[in-house]
Image (spheres, rainbow, N blue to C red):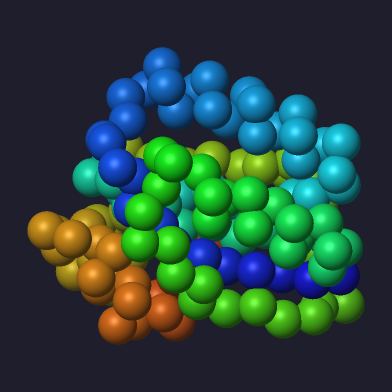
Length: 138
């Protein structure tokens, strides 16, 4: 099993209807390719996503994401081979960080108060893993 974590910046901020439509499409595509994971959105345009599945499927999806005109500043933060999936039950979990009560969690308020979450995550890639682990348990 293979995991890949990346961050990206949306070229335009996305509203709830757009996000829900995108998630429906992502989940159908991921189910067909046996990819699971979690997508986090900060409400300001920064996405953090963990993809997991067979290495070829995950890398092919990441390549498509890199070509997606809705994204810019795509940056791979982490990739590794793992024994088992972290999100085996989720074709693609989704959380909006700006809609969650996370302010009391260690490091969350510092991240959420950033004008540019993308820049913060570029300089603190380990925090993206903490976010993903936190939301796995929610």
